[in-house]
Image 1: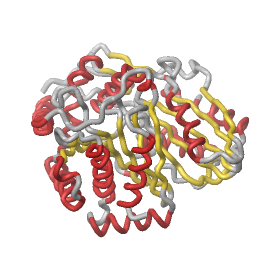
Image 2: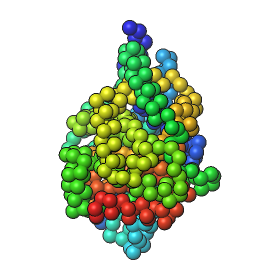
Image 3: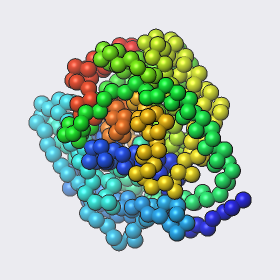
Length: 442
């Protein structure tokens, strides 16, 4: 068994990290901004702007990892080059105000401007925006997905609140190193064979059904539609999901709802060729590890194939999703994707971006989906303000330029539709929201 040398003090990028870098590369080429996301805390009352900026600056200065950049080691493995403690660019922090009568559409339109703005340098991966709207305020953290996944970003804000409340330093527990994984080649190639067979099955009827991505200049922005549910609605949705899909099977249930809703849009446009291929990201960390594995990407994927004739019949659709999920868990496909992806790190990002689209004839998926689960931000306050809700606004990778994402925050389920501007009309978006609410029973 060949073990190549590596440094124990570096944070080597995993294969999944490198896949996320490829998403970032593709999305930058298509839209001008990368694979970024935004976590938004809706607060009761006005957050103190001066104190917030000062506290954030002190906090961020403890973590030079947020201003790193990718590099290649002498062994050709990519790693995250972390600058010395003192080399810190200014923290990106902006403030805006809306009128007292501003509604949710105005709030999220303003927040969308923040997450659609490209970072200004290769070492900038984090920014904050404070928005005042009447008796509410919104603290938004825009982050590079190469640095955080969704749950990691939540945990990072939780760490800020923990330090703000004076509960002690926990940074010593955070992992900032990662081995190069330049070993166990036989297992990696065996995993690669399994993953390749899975993609060959997905590509038998390629390309999948997709909505066309508009050409420039409209494709420069990603638009968002937030779909919030209160505690009572969420409890009803969870009960229905457990009754129809099975205990703890909320993810397959809301995925089935998302597929059926999107199928209606495809059918209305008379797009009937091919099957639906859905990439579903899943968090691979045990809950007790989230506090240590805050930075970078700790996820893998389910890959679902939904035949067109199934997509309109909810019982058959849900049964197909459950069957495929069980089969992939049993066969170990998500863990094999993690293992096999380490072999791709040698490939430069432009080439990898092309290779990732070969099986599906230029496409990645029909749409992206995730269910993050309960938030890793466990506090009911941010600084001294009550947290009313937490939203995610992820810039969906392009392609496919379309994604539906769900997460829970303190007993509230929130959905978000993320799509390239011009891909869906306002009427189609409103139709999707109404159909989703109807199918979820609220």
